[in-house]
Amino acid sequence: MSLMSISNWAAAEEGANPLIPHTAELVVGFVAFSLLFLVLRSKVVPMFEKAFSERTEAIQGGMEKAERAQLEAEKALAQYTTQLNEARGEAAKIREDARVQGAAIIEDLRNKAAEEAARITAAAVASIEAERQQAVTSLRNEVGSLATELAGKIVGEALDDQVRQSRIVDRFIADLEKSK
Image 1: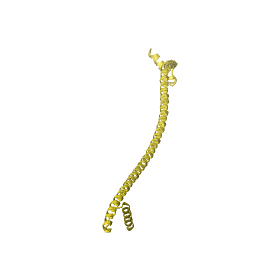
Image 2: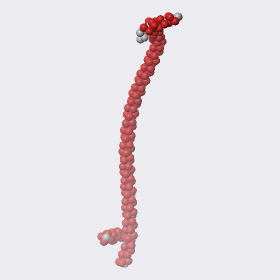
Image 3: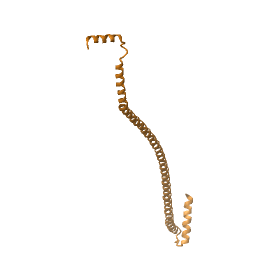
């Protein structure tokens, strides 16, 4: 280009509004923008949408999974609480049954001990009574023979008659019992 043409161009440029772009720049800019838009729309936007939908599905699936897990946890907690309450009730019932059985066993042992004590006492009383009767009989025979012998010495006669000896001994023992 010649110096003249550059100066004409510069002069022409000086007269033009600097805010309004040239038509060629507008066409080139529009074509470049359209190409960029088409490439982005056909290649990049589907990848973004795919990633966005995958993330959305993952988040929704995670939320659903979390809700299911929370529901299962609540059910498990309710079941655990129910089982715990049942176990506490059963433990209380077992303790009460054990206490009742313990009281029954103690009462049974007391009754058996009382029966055994009564049996031992009755046997002892019977044994004492039998020994007393035996002692009384033995004492009666000895006292009778001594009294008969003594009476025979006092009277000077032999008291060999059994019936008479018996009456004398009975009378003597009766007098002893009255003197008590």
